[in-house]
Image (tube, rainbow, N blue to C red):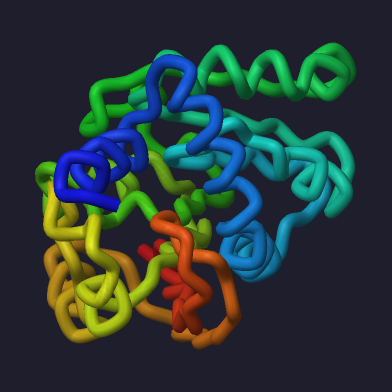
Length: 219
């Protein structure tokens, strides 16, 4: 891929749009499924939980959440209007029979009141947070007491090797994120590491290391 194509790919990964955005979203759903499952598993979902997903994409994984327990309430936020539309389209049957809501937002503020969600998770959105300290405190605000937030991402040493991440990606090491967490009242409960073989967004097969940080809101 040339520089212009890499830049276009980076823009689509951050905010999918148009016909190309649908294709990129499908690729992200396939490539990120292990990361998504890892994040969901660490939520320890229970019956009746209210769950927030930040950056749901096309949400092809939604059924995996509803297989975990009953009477779940799911809210998904995304900055992409296309992803809002695609998620609703792909999950029509689930939406008809469950408490599910997909919302558009500006990437900074949720409309819910304080202490709204039992569980919150996000996969591969950290790189695009415009105000990371303010945003993690916004996540904390909407997490219920004793609630869990799972932050799943690939570390800087892997991401910086990918040719498109120089266009608009903010990359983080574990230490960088730990410093970010210190600006909130979240407690870091554990860090789980995984490695997988994937086809990168630009076509080559790579070994990706990723991790999930499990945070808890304690008062």
